[in-house]
Image (cartoon, rainbow, N blue to C red):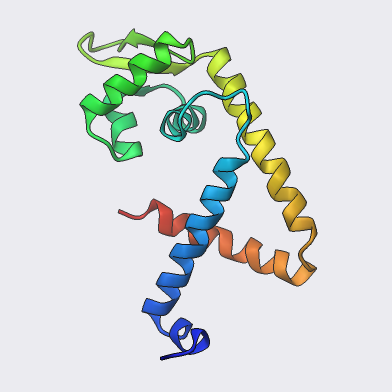
Length: 149
């Protein structure tokens, strides 16, 4: 049986270890969500996309979140019913729906992010300067992996 050190030296080993580490961190961060937040992770992702990119069509949101447009339409409907987003007709094409983040949606998103960022900042304080530097260097690389198709 190969040791962990030998497995991680291969690209396949690195892929496996990175996948496990990222998924475990994601689950841990999800458990640190604002306790008053009743929205799903997928709903929060939609709010995050609107926060980062501004107003988007349902089709653009679906592409960003990698779901089918009918699924995004259902998600947007639920978010609209909760007062987190608003819909309006596109300025030049009335057949297209544009989704906007409301003040309520922005507040919910930022409160949730703040809580998780605070937890992660506390964990990072326990790392050495060198370990934090490695994470600073790795973060753009991980982000580029996440952005690839």
